[in-house]
Image (cartoon, rainbow, N blue to C red; front, side, top):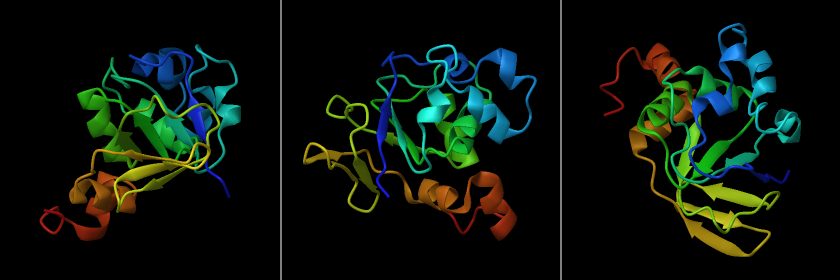
Length: 167
């Protein structure tokens, strides 16, 4: 199955309130249900575009704003494989890996909406199959890969009982 890129209308400075508005994130506890409201203020039915394994592509400073974990948790619950952006807000970055959402930092100008792309974390590249391009990505530290493999920090800790093995 092909994995596709979905670009946002607004590239840079997508804040957590755009990802999931406060009018939903404080009322809905179920992440699957909450994921139906991602980017609702920017594009009414954005969640309907996403198929399991797809990628969200944005510009710089993605996830700025409040530090609540609902934003990365709702993105993960939507079925996205990863968010690809030029840069991420620091707290969003930490929260995303805590909940097991993969974040990829790289140049995003050569990825258009609905391009077919493949992520290779071993080679640290994205292959844009639609354009025949390879895009270098910032390597993800091994500990973060372990968290992703287990579904986040909590799931990692449940399995191993500590973080010593991860370091």
